[in-house]
Image (cartoon, rainbow, N blue to C red; front, side, top):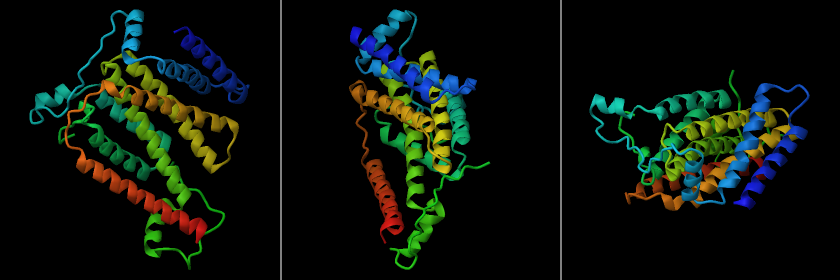
Length: 302
């Protein structure tokens, strides 16, 4: 406990030093200060949590707040799907969070294609993990940014492999680097959404817990700011300020993912058959890998 507490405060001080030296300018604005404050607090908290089990964390939370409530059973949204009362009963904070999440992602990404691909991907992620997270079971009713990068060396149109397929792919992705950027964006957006579901279930938080709200506020502001700087990095120029925002955001999401993996024993599978969705994911990953490989070879090798 003593070692983790010391490291917690050292990480806060080190992050504040780095941000103060390289990010915060003389003309301080409230958005920058808020993002730096959230990042400097949330990142050390995630490092601190890595030293403890979920039972120990719940004990600490009860010690700080004796009235806190935990919810060991996740909500299931696939029960009684044919009555209006069921619809109103299932209406909770996550319905509002879905709409707000779409709005924030639209502000951050501003690309219709990427936003829709991201939505489809998260539906597939829900199918993949619904045997672990019951709330992924659902009823049946349930100025634009241009994310492309110009290449200095144009591909040789005479020697490209599978020219018809190459033309089709370039209508969507332009080139291999742009495709890689879009894949990275979809990965980060879905990771930030998926982490909260796993951590909430593993720590047994209620959907209305103030800790869930705080996490969402922290991550939304941090990732929104990072998305803006990521776009400026690939469209204008890279500097240490923009890179620092991107690295810290990716580190925060990676630490959340690490916690979810470490605490996976707290989730119990319902042993439902996931063969079909696993095959679909394998086919999709193979298709994306093949498409990227084709664009990359035609861009840089042929």
